[in-house]
Length: 309
Ligand SMILES: Cc1cc2nc3c(=O)[nH]c(=O)nc-3n(C[C@H](O)[C@H](O)[C@H](O)COP(=O)(O)OP(=O)(O)OC[C@H]3O[C@@H](n4cnc5c(N)ncnc54)[C@H](O)[C@@H]3O)c2cc1C
Image (cartoon, rainbow, N blue to C red):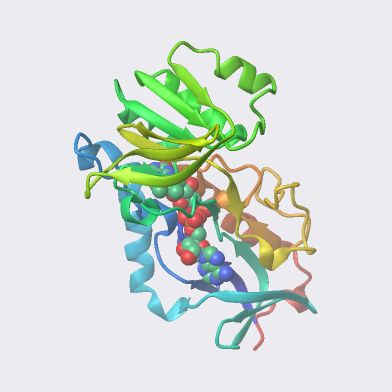
């Protein structure tokens, strides 16, 4: 039985694993990949690489540390997580199981996609899923936000302070008529196209240049310098469904020390309801979760805390 299993190789999981190593914990690090969502980078002709390095160097440091510690790493997708006597059992895709006294879950979240032609072709080539990250680079640009919920409205709010024009394309009324919508959508440089469906992401073969929408029975191409798909974030929390408290969208509830409602199970980063969906927050979260797991182990009764296999 290990002391800790960290699940997920993004900023939160990397930081948790690195701090577990520092604390000389008997830890296992299980992830499909290393780096998580922060590895994806928006490319546009006017964006230089140096402008979008946000915490990347720090993440790379953790990554290098764990590359070296390959013996404690399992490259696999976790398919099950069960509570067993005295701890947790984690099963990976090939059926192997690993047991631990504590678990840090750092499996992240993903953005709902448009599923239209051109989306994959232009993904990160002008079409992207993180306005929060890239809004500052859109000075004097014309951009499109696709979505109708709070996530999209927050993106419009942030972008409208920076860009020349932001067009929100909303398939339904969603949250548009709520208090945030009423405040955000009145700005002079914000246009809203309601009840419009995106049919295609259009581009010049290298970069996205707009979207084709169906609106009031006709099709129209709306040009833009960048497109932000801000439809919904979906947490990868299925592994602990029914085990821990979650918010209505499935994000795991944690306290200020990243403890979930189930003793011994900690969560960090974008999979939690307290996430700000930024890599640096994920790093701090992962660190806190590992330190909380360490403290939890110190408090276990002696018979349980001994590492037996
Ligand atoms: C396109 C894009 C660009 C971004 N750019 C930036 C940026 O420049 N700066 C910034 O601060 N933030 C950026 N963000 C936000 C940032 O990437 C996230 O907030 C951050 O990556 C969250 O870290 P995380 O570790 O919680 O989750 P993630 O980075 O999503 O990592 C989750 C990890 O868990 C693994 N995993 C998931 N399920 C399983 C499973 N069942 N078994 C095993 N492993 C599993 C995944 O493979 C992955 O390694 C960006 C987001 C997007 C979408």
